[in-house]
Length: 273
Image (cartoon, rainbow, N blue to C red; front, side, top):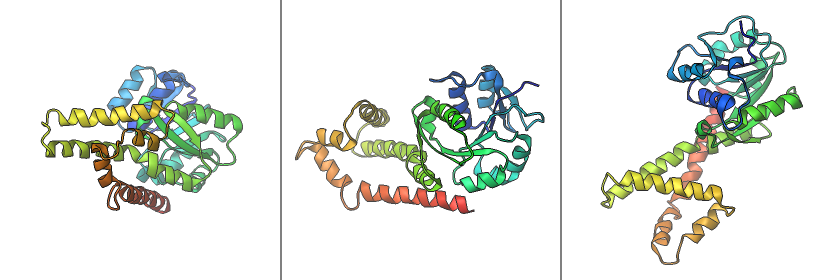
C-alpha cells in the first residue's frame, strides 16, 4: 500500500475544495499520490480528485503508520460514530485538523488522545482560494506542525490563528455562515428590483454583478467599508434615500446583529450537545 502522509475523512464540498487547493491550487502543498480520500460514497468530487492522482477508499484501511496530517471534514453528527475508529488507525503524534462546526477542542482531545488536534473554521469561498479560515491549536501541536497546518489551510485563502474555541464560534457566525448572508442579500436585491418593475431577465444580472463588483472594489481598496460607502453616497441623493431605510432602527444593523448572534449561539449549542 502507498505510504500516505495525508488523509481526508469526508470528501464533500468543503473537504474536496481544500484538497483541490492542496494539490493544484495557489500554493500546492501535498503530492496527490500521498493523499488518501475516505468517504463512503465515491461522489463526483472524489472522482475528480482521483483523476488528478489522489487515492480513494470507502473506509479506513490498516497500515497508516506514515500518516502525518488528517483533515476531518465529516458531518458533525457523525463524529461520535467514527472518531474512535479513526483514532485507532492513526499514529501517535499525527495532527488531526477538524473543520466540524460546534465540535470543541476538548471533544477533539477526548476523541484523539494520542494525536495532536487543531480546530479550524473555513468558509465556502475557500473552494476558489478566496476564503478565510480561523484555527486554534492545542498545546501539543509543535511549531513545525503549526507551520504545515497554516500552509494546508492557506490553500483556501487567508488564515488567522485565534485564541480559543469561543473565538472559533464567533468566526463561525461571521465568516463561516457569512457567505449565506451575502447570497441572501443578492436574492433580496433581485426580488426588490423585480418588484419596482425591472424585467426578470435583467434583475438577477444587475443584482449579482452589483454585489460582485462591490466586493472586488472592497478587496482592492485600502479604504474601509465605511469610507467606500460614504464615497458613493451624495447628500440628498438616491443612495442616501436608500440608506435612510437600511440604517434605520428597523434596518440592516439590528437585523445583522441578531443574525450573527443566532449563528453564534447555535455554534455554542452544537458544542454542548
